[in-house]
Image (cartoon, rainbow, N blue to C red; front, side, top):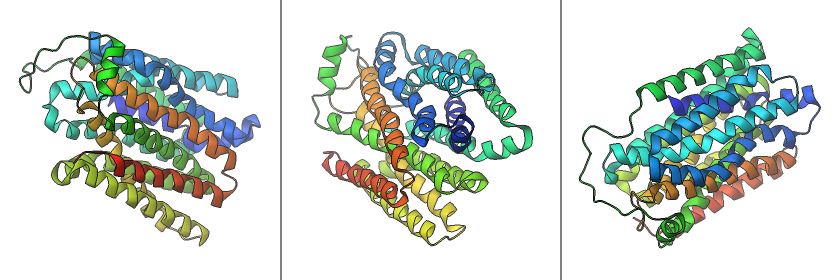
Length: 375
C-alpha cells in the first residue's frame, strides 16, 4: 500500500502537465520537471539509503521515505498557485522516494528465500505501478468532479493513511527466518561496492533500469500529449496498469522459463507494441490505443523487477551489501527518470521524432539484455 500511495501521488501529476503549461505559461520541458525531479533526487539519496539499510534495516529507510512523502504530497494541495511552489512539493516528495524504493528488494529478501524472492519483489513493485495507473487514470475525472485542489487532497489523504499503516504495522523481520542464513561480516561502502561489481552483469542491470524507468515516464507524458484530456487519461491509465500487471506476472514466467529469456522477449514485444501505438495514432483509430497501451506497459515494465532481483542475487552480493546493490540499481534507474522525460519534452511536438527516440531507447534495452550472462 505504501508503494501504491507513492505511485498514485506521483503520477496524479502526469495528466495535469498540459494544464500547468497553460496556467503558468511554461514550456513542455519545464512542466515535465514536476515529474522527473522526483527521480532526480533518488540519484542523491539512493546511496545513503542503501547504507542505512545495511546498518539499521529496511523498515527505517522506508519510514524516512514515507515521512518525506506525506510532507511533499500532503502540502501539495496548498502549493498549486505557482510553478515554484508546486516544484517545491515535488522536491520534498522526491527526497523520500529513494528511501522507499531502495528498501524494496532487501526487505523482500528478509521475508522470503533468496532463490524465490523475485516473486515478492515483482508483487511489491506492481503496487507502485498500480498507483501510477490509478493516479493518471482517476485524476482527470476527480478534477472535473471536485476541483484540482480537492483531487490532490484525496491523494494526500491516501499518502497519510499509508504512512500510518507502515509505521504502525510493518515489521523488519519475520518471526522465523525463511531459510538458514550465514553470518556475514559488515563491510564499508567501497569494499561492498567492489564486491558487487565483481560480476560483469552488475554493470548492465542499472542501465537496464535507467532505460525502463526513463522510457516509462517519457511514454506516459507523451501519451497524454498526443491524447489530451480524458482520452489521454484512459489510455495513459491503461498503459500504467499494464506496467503493474507486467511487474506482477513476469517474475512467475521468469522463474519457469528463465530470467534472461523472458526479459529479452518482453523487451522486444514492448518495441512492437510501441510501434503499434504510433500506427494507430497516425490512422486516428479508437479503442486500439487503449489495448496496445496496456500491452506496451506490460512488456516494458516486466523486466524491471527481474533486473532488480538479478542485481540483488549476483555473485558478490550478500546481506552485508545488498542495500548498496539496491541503491546502485535504483539510483541509475532514476537518472533515467530525471533525464529522459525532460529530453523528450523538448521534442514531443515533433511526434515522429519523439516516437523514434523512445523506440531507440527500447531497442537499446533489448540489446542490453542480450549482453547479460545469466540463464
